Image (cartoon, rainbow, N blue to C red; front, side, top):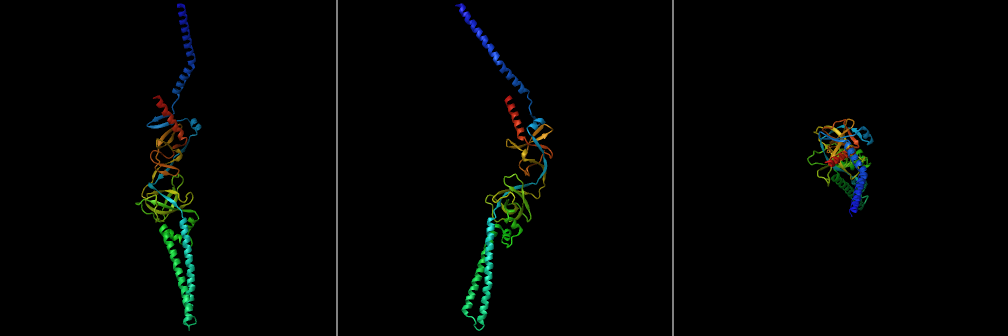
Length: 355
């Protein structure tokens, strides 16, 4: 009985030893791989660092080339203090229709006036014959006078209709445009509007803003567009208010180009007494957004990229005007900025995992 128990105990010990040996043998590779991975992760150098509160990403020239990171030197720019307003491109179809009606009424008045001249002369002739020994009857003289009076009434009615149409034009479009539209031969300015070389704008300015002077201009661009701006020339005050905006309204002309009837436009007004501020224009392609703030990466040396916060309050041609620490000629990343921001994210995630 004791021999049997001893044999069982020996077999159990043998099995335990074999299981322990197999565990060590098969777990050796996993242990080495885990140990090697930890060592490699520790030995991998970080590309991100903090210096004087600024985040700096370091990438070798070879990595920059492989990632297609491109830079552009900042250009000098100036900003004239002012404010923005809005307006719209006005359809001149009603103006054209009013011009057609007015010219038709004037033509009808001219025809009636010609008939009036003939009927008046005929009445005078018959009246003279009647007075000369009654060579013509009184009835004929009265009939001629009736025709004359009827033609006179037609002239008055046609002239009244034309005057009413002109008054409506003046009420809707102002005296300056009414004078252009009711001219028998359209002037150069009206021809440009009719031929769609120019468009008519209605601009809304603040109540406390001084009225534009003849010959004054302003810069306009389609609302929400980052394209080029157009120079609009002052025409006259507008009798009609903009239902969407409160303020004084004025008519301007601008080249048609990219402007279409019904389009909303943004207007930039400069303060005449303000001095321009010097700075740089940050290209649109250099801006990345993070945490609700606009940022750019400025290149320093061959491999360092420093993240800077910028302002997007002052729009400029092709970008944003910024004063302050940025200087003309400094290189900013215009392609690959999002990649640099991603590199920062990886650095932050690694630090959080280590903590």
